[in-house]
Length: 339
Image (cartoon, rainbow, N blue to C red; front, top):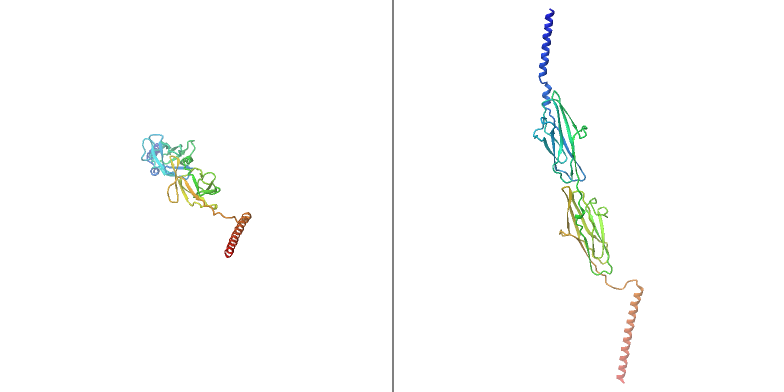
């Protein structure tokens, strides 16, 4: 009886062991769900700009497996998975599907073959470990270059342009011409005025305005300045009417249009100056005719007034004397004829 019980227990134990081994060979239900949830990585690109220039250039990045057998996104090659990001943006890589448990390692870095002017590239290399467990659930950790955990995969590039060179700016002269014959030369004022007070201006400007002066006929310049932003800038040059007597002021107004663009990281300037007839010029010319006042006695001058009165009295006396002389002469002749 006891032997029978022992045999039954042994048989039951064998069956239990066989069932356990069979269960271990069957894939768990949870594994199928994990296959439908692959790894999707997000990579970001941002720019640290020193100007308002909008950066829309395209930059290249690459995901590289540490081992050749590591799962990779669709479209990968022997070099890895190469992708691009344009401007400041974030993209998602194609999903990476894992079918086997294990540890998988990767690196992600920017690919720089030719450096464009004005850019500083992020040379950061991120490393990533992906852990896939028996149930094919996965978890991953991204590390920066110091092996500290990184919250995201972000590449921070910089864009800095070189300011424009003032030596290549046309500093057009103001040419002042005075016609007529003034006794003494007068001083004339000319103004350079920006369309916006915040625009770049030459040294000595105040709130977007600079004034220079010329005494008599001559020339002068406002001076050059630099640009550190792309854009189109407008200025006006004209003569201020300060009301010096005898002069007719020139009302001509000149327009400056400066177009500034970034070329290989350098700001380059193109300047066009036009007059009121919309003709392109290379100088600011102003002509002021001078007309002298008619001569005459100065009112309030006592000495000159007395002189004029004396001359008038003398003239009158001379005229009266001449008349008396003629009258006496005529009387004598008449008496002689009667005698």
